[in-house]
Image (cartoon, rainbow, N blue to C red; front, side, top):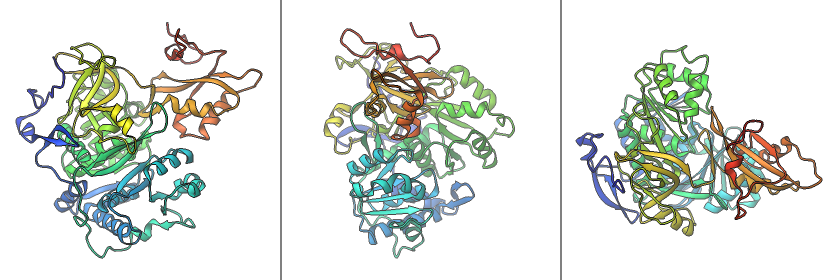
Length: 551
């Protein structure tokens, strides 16, 4: 039987012996896991090792700006020193970081870590009410952000939250501290190693939406993030010669751990895009000689079908990793035809495992699978009703055990207990695992929509729509889409005698939630379909209005 078997350590020939010899077993957060023997003990040490080895190498490229590792480290130290000495940030304090992709974000995150504090990584697409909960729940004492996030979304809630200091990059904002006052003030001493840290200390809190109630702050420790970086480096064979292009947000684990952290560990360079744009990404891959990315399948499909797809020589682009949504064998074939020689890796990850859960050595071999457990992970398929392990090819919930698994959710011990059993994370995804150990996703337990890698939990949007006085009932479902994988559909039962339009429904959500959560489709019905127990049968609603309903 497959159960709990680690393909790479317990007999797989996918990895050379010189890689598997780097592993041993150790207790991590109270659980025995495979770990790398020779590893940095903190994320700051991981960063500093590369600074010392490649001080004058370009580390970050953003628009017309470049930072070498030495320059990046100096700015990190300046900000860290200001946080500690000027604003009283202490070990374990929570410091919010709220940016679009930019250099200030990369500087701020590592400065908070060097200061011994915890980064509360915030999504700049969220609206005031969503941010208010996360800032208050985490107990954020200082927020580092940019003017275009602060003015519309933080200023309106400033009197409602306990945050003491606001540092703002960009245009000057009254009542805030300019980011330049931190980054340009030379530190009196090097803070590296001055604040005692343990590898099991929490380094990040990253909020992930819950199927019920409020979002949960998934904690990620130093040892979690270190193993994430090392797993991706070894899995994709990333070297100091590689240049990765980061088009996904740095506030997601994919951008943060799978790309930025992995490239730091390898000593490579990161080309950071402020937002995804197919034409710009193709141009940057060519002109900056990028060799690597990890993104959702939607990004590859958009680039491949863009008029500029064959305008440039992309033959140097060798690592095409993807995850967050399914991709067809035909799409993979077309990607390989577009860029001959590219290695396409399918990857499955979650916020709760600091990104890597399973990987494929090369998806061109088998497009349908999400691969095997990562180098330091174990996986099993478990019957969600009985808790017993499933035999090969029988559907069950995917459980993952790894040094990457979160220590838990911030201030949510009950949610943590439900999510993790004896070190095994319950992913909420239904899979089969075959005799060879290949894992295949079949469905999901969670009522979640995956819009091009953006996770939307139906209950969040439903709760917002239920505050509309014209709505009696509503169900949020995902419908298939060739570009994004899934799009959001609202099925609405209006109250009797009211007039309600499709645009009113969309506007209600857009004014209260991140734009990507706004339903693409709205359908009005007299009643929602229910089973004998009164539960809404959402399967019957997963079709695009005007098209044939599913059988």
